[in-house]
Picture 1 (cartoon, rainbow, N blue to C red):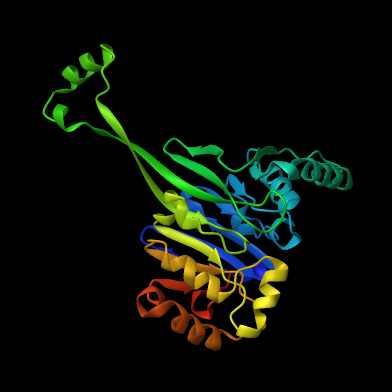
Picture 2 (cartoon, rainbow, N blue to C red):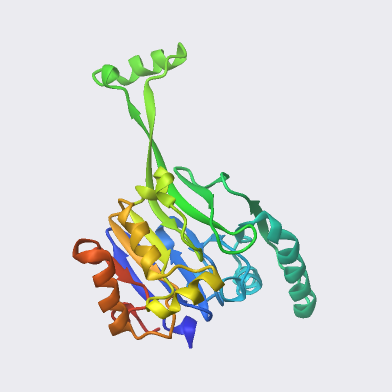
Length: 285
């Protein structure tokens, strides 16, 4: 049932569409940014998005890769771009080739291997920054950053031709600004992400918090996932305007999750936090 009953959030001017339940499926798309974080089972709403940002290779996050790429060809779109941990590129190519043989048609793909610290341009002013996470070998997270240039104050009153003259002389008339729009952590154990400014100041944080009950802390450690106690420490150190929680376990009901969450992270933080799979965010096709 997963992909045909997606959540749909609107934050400021951005849509967040997806599905994320621990062990079942995770796919989170932001159409205006032209990115899809993980690909789950590749629901139809994601096919037109040009960039899939894969955090790791677990089935519930990566099973839709071949379908996503194949269906783009079927519908006459250019090959999709999949950013994935560099150590996964070989296995992904084998999967795509195998499906191509089963289907009887080659599946075109633009595969990009990434490691922590890499950047990739998705639009003229949008860049993806890659950072390490603590889940499986090579697992990563992504921050989408908007970059602009601003005119230096001393040149503010000059005319266009005067500015051109300065540029022709090799004078730098502007300075760069960057605005982290969204950070997607993917599956991860606790890491002090506040050490990375572009994560700490992202307008939107999309983060897993899989387990909530005290007796589930061992499960969190075993699966390299985040427990509410660790999540509370993490968000307390960040300055995000909006927080979206993904990858909830089905072992705990949503009413109990809301109660525990509010108790652990406090009223102020709770008011800017939403669970992606809260029934209030669901829509039917």
